[in-house]
Image (cartoon, rainbow, N blue to C red; front, side):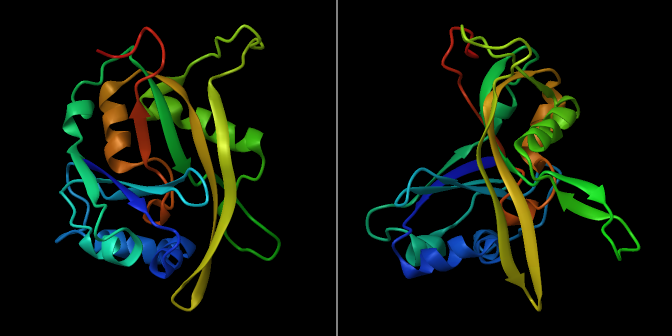
Length: 229
């Protein structure tokens, strides 16, 4: 597995086209691989992180190394910036139970429901912060981690190191249909409870809508004394 980081130039017309359509961006990401199908190691996952109106970072996890020349030419800085790809196994193979990591995840929190006139249940997006947080908490164990309690002096009993830093609804065309996806970006502190399950989650993603920028969980060293060594 590999993890790639690339800065997008949102001032460019090509970038605006990609940023407005997860379908278009997914196609562009997949075009960077000779074979974009999932493997036994993992699948292609991507996520856009927005740090301001002029700073957008594309992260991609993939079984193979990408060639994103076409995205740089369309939506980057062709003469000054490229992409940075690093082997992911260095992190995946050192996961152990008890480690603590800062994490970030953009996901599609949904539940099965039925609206008036529907004959079958369908995925419906959770709409409140509490519902979306609970969606992740309900799935944490099976994905190999638990969310840590908040340790700040002003922390309330039972409060967790879990924030939703961005929420939204994405609507875009796919063929002759229109797709609607509710998203939530989670940040916080997790503890590894099952290293194999967490490795699988990092390689294959969490939740639905993985083709549309959801499901990629990334880890970083926490700013505490018990950082993994």
